[in-house]
Image (cartoon, rainbow, N blue to C red; front, side, top):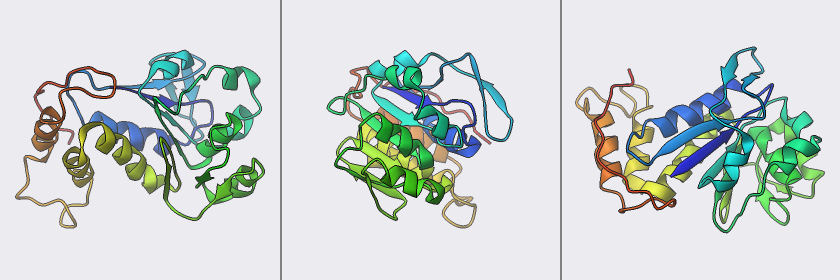
Length: 221
């Protein structure tokens, strides 16, 4: 299972790192998560520069492609070179966005005739593409999903996890980020191990046809 997170200059930090963290809590062979960009490094809206794992063309063969958000989306929707890098297939790929990342989906024509959600400041611009924008944290239309509001990253990542590995893996991953005493408890010290056990017990192959085998859990905290 190859998952690509698409970044660019002026991306919103949490909308990349929260999705990345959730997806990387699964550590089984064949489960690959990479951040892709046009350049070797991109700088977030807060000024943090990070290296990319690969180039945009990798997204076209990924099983899931998730677009980040941020002020940079307003430039990317007008960047013909950036947009032409993508040759995505809604029949074969899971495609999603965080907040204003929905603008890129619209610019690619992927939201034609569909409902979507986005960050409030991007609503009017998204509507200008003819998209019906609805006030929900997560909107799923077939193989395309839009999430809005930073904490909605758990819905976007959860969708990819559940569709690929099942509801038990999704539930365990999301449980692992709950506040202690409010969903995460001291009598559950094995939650990280359970994520790997459930992932191992998932169907023989992911969407990419790569087997998932048992991996040793490593503490994230």
